[in-house]
Length: 218
Image (cartoon, rainbow, N blue to C red; front, top):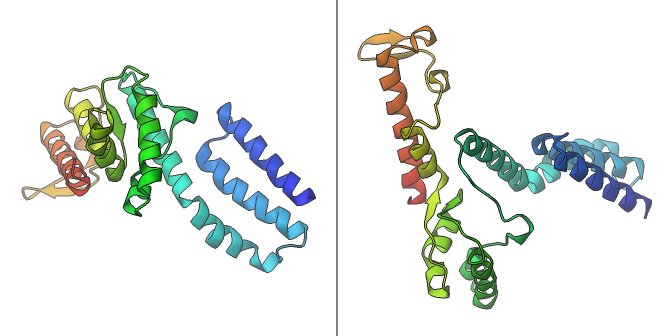
C-alpha cells in the first residue's frame, strides 16, 4: 500500500513539473524509472543487485516508446514554432488511429476508433494533419476516407522540406558538415559561409529527407 502511494506521488510530482515546464519530459521519464525502482528496493520487493537490471532492462524497454515520442514530438513542435507554423494538438481527445487493431483483425475496435476520431477531427477547422508514423499516415490519409474523413495528411519530413525550402527554417551547416571532401577539395566549418558549402549542405539535406520520405512512402 505504502509503495503504491509513493509511486503515485512520483507520477503526480513529475506530471506537475512537466506541465509547468520545470522538468523536461526526456529527463523526467528516466528519473521516474530510477525513483520507482529505488522505492521497490527500499520496500524489500526488489534486491539492490537487481536495481540496474530493473531500470536499464525492464524500465528502458517499457519507456522506450514514450521517450521517443517525447523527444521527436518536442523537437518537431519546437521547429514548427520557430518557423511560425500555426498548429495545435488534440491532447486528451487524441486516440489511436485504429490501424494496429485492424492489422490484428479486430475490425470492430478499429472502426470504433476511426468513427470517434473522424467525429473529433471534423469538429475542428484545419488545413492538414502532420504525422511522424507511416502507419498513421496511411490510415488517416487513405483508410479514413470511407468513414467521412477526407484529410490532407503529410509526413513530418515533407513538412520540414517545405519549411526549409521556403526559408522559414534554416539548417546550420555544422549540422551536416565538419570536414568533407567535395570534388577533390576539403572544406571545414570555417568556410560554411561560402557558396560551395551552402550547395553541399542543401544537397545532403535533400538526400536525407528524400531517403526518409521513400522509407515511409510519403
